[in-house]
Length: 137
Figure 1 (cartoon, rainbow, N blue to C red):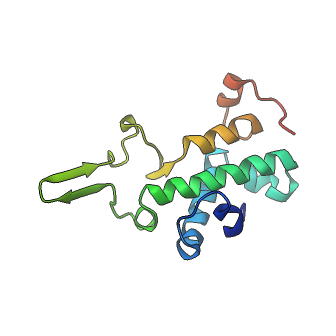
Figure 2 (figure 1 turned 120 degrees about the vertical axis):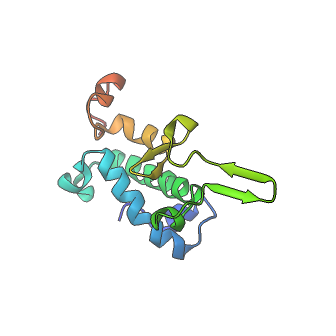
């Protein structure tokens, strides 16, 4: 587990702990996925303190992003991004990243999380080469 509810709730007020517990494993899996599973392979506890802090911050913002992108509805593959009430309708783009929301396998992904991860050298190349990250710790 990258973060606790206490760490998360120091930054954001929602979701409640029950929904947080449902969202966190998906947030962590998404972060590890974009890092090429390096966190799992290397072991979170084996990473330096600065890298762990960056991953924790990324997890906080990713949980919040998933929550704001539909929360448990996203996890259950239900659409929460399309709303219609009388003559009013709204759509978040339904997973279309050209609409300004980034998605990874249908899960909303926080660009702020990505910014925390950039200097860690965990992201797939060539991202690190573009940003010049070598050794973050």
